[in-house]
Image 1: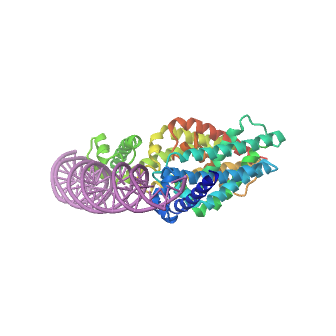
Image 2: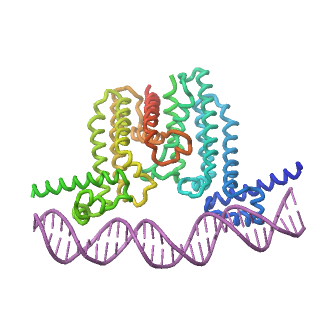
Image 3: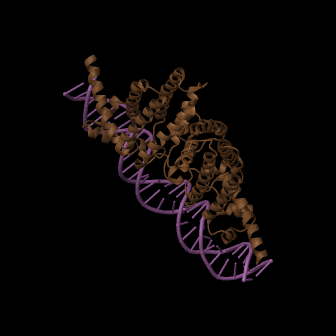
Length: 205
Length: 205
DNA sequence: TCCTGACTTTTTTAACAAAACTATCAAAAA
DNA sequence: TTTTTGATAGTTTTGTTAAAAAAGTCAGGA
């Protein structure tokens, strides 16, 4: 029983890896179940033995990425001496995450049709986790007496995350595109560091 | 000659008004030249006598809106005692402008296909004007000694405008939609005021 | 329990005709 | 000479349908 599940889990992982590669390079709608099965030298029907349908497979890949990202954040966010370092770590981690999975998220935008609705739940989940982690960091900093007490830390963090998310580069017309181009990521990252700097000072005494 | 041009200008204004109404209610691609002509009880061919084509007509409407908006900003932005009031005036003005032309801008988003490319020039123009006005406000405040000197005021204003633009409300999935829903505008406005407050404090000594 | 080939059902694509719309123009009206 | 229009040419969008591709199922084999 246990050995059987182990074997199943290993196979599931292999399927997730192969799917990840396909989705990363070609996106959801340009990846077929036959192609994934072909990469793994297995029949398409076997994919349906391990995953109920294509959308659930995609979601499973996404969930794995999200878990890795959150794990990284949770393991480190409490280790910093002050609020600014914690916030800087969050945007650095986020930046690295986006860079290494750029194509995956490039496809994962409004342009892509037929994306399963449930992915938004994962995004929501990640967002809530980030909100909690950073709110806790603010509360700690207030107790420490380093910044002014605020009635609602979650509100402040939500505001900051929105603001960070709004940072774009280039001309206005370029800013309208939903997902930033790869060559702009570094510049966006730099601007976010600047925003963090000003924002944190605004919270201080 | 002068009387002739006057008459032409009046007619052009009437066409712009009728077009504005149509574009406001139905958007660019769902408005036909026949409908505009019908509203004015004139032939479609006459529209082409006053405007070279449909896109130029749309752009003319847009330019008129932009000019009114900028005029309002330029006339008042220098009359404030401090930087915060100037910034608050900017977002209030912007808010009112969006509210009263909501449908126009609701259509004016990525969903709308076939929008003439040249409209981005107008958006860019408005953005640059805002950038200049607000940068000047910062410079004034620095001379006044109220905030810390910054090497590049334009950079700061650009950052703030991006951040303000990123402010959304509701769940993450809702935030993905390009243009905010009408019932969220007030909440967004409130959050922007909060962001301004923190941001300005971050610029102060 | 794990796996497959063959099969059914659903979705996407391509081609093309019909309809709607933009844009033009010669000529009439003012 | 300037302003206006009906008729019409040219282009884009829409609707239809058949073929191709892909998703998803299933009976049965190892």
